[in-house]
Length: 463
Image (cartoon, rainbow, N blue to C red; front, top):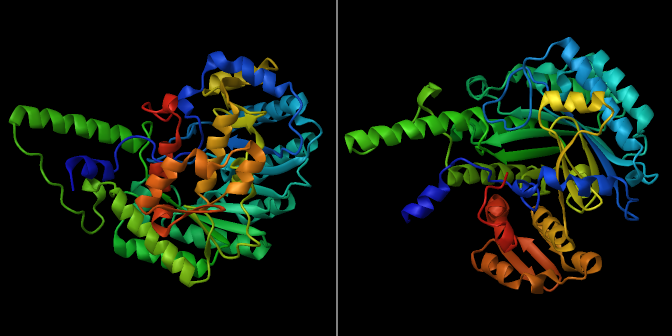
């Protein structure tokens, strides 16, 4: 294997996973006129509308987290933010782009939505539902950190219409959780899950991360075994990445700079770091991509043995007909979504939109009665075609007829060279009615998606 390929298989700095297109780096503040225009136009008939609400508070900041979160806000700060969030939803609800649509899906993400108290959640959701009811929504998802849940809080969420809980378990071993900056413990996972089961939530998802610092094969097998015993409706497994603005990434940059300096001054080979033992994680490293893919492959195989089906490159579900991911599938098929809260991302009438990304700007704009937009990108039909194609490919299947009907394009011809290259490498199969991922393709499709990017969007940072 060449040095170049070896380097590519290390877990280096930057985003590995593709969440949108065109890349975020092309979204600009000087394109905000397009966002205002999109908000003030009636929607395209038949386009679903969703609502994302960013709750940016956490007990601790995970060392791999790259989202806009706060660990230093007091009760008054939180109330100020929640008031601003309600105000933002109210302002958006009055825009012509709503067009009389009911919400198709609602997603409370973070941060840690479950960081809020039961009283705060009851007040927040009551005010939100009075502005944009979600009684007709197909899905209302709520992200949780197990250690922040109490039984009465879950009872409130159930009464307020939450249909799907997503538990950020990530790992079960205390030492790994602690070293990676997670705040919960294994016993809190089991306790919270038990309460949620007793209360009869329609769907419970468990998040795991393959490749947290300190992970081993034995512990990963144990994590998979314990998740299977819980038997959630779905399991989402992410492979650890190191975007530029995480604690681990900053530490890695400092380490690399120091190693380069030592190497230059001593003119010697860099030392080999030995494997950590007895969970002394002070010298542990992030696993390389082949190891993380092997861990995910093992997990998916074990879940399939237990009767789960693969729903995407990251997700398995117990019952594919019953367990839906409305938020994911609607977005990946071009739905509109109001992204509310500091630094949140949305999409309306063909325009990508992100809110301002600082606390001060967000609060100030809403204090003045202004929707807190920060940057935007107006997409062309080809942009939207490519966006849907690369995102839907993550589900394992592209239907040629869908894209012909919506965009008038036969993707197997328009992108024939791209698909042929992926097929020759063993990542997809191409048939008369569409494209399917192979088992190997499921494990690493994100690294190959940039091959579909138009030339003008290549060669820069993704974010």
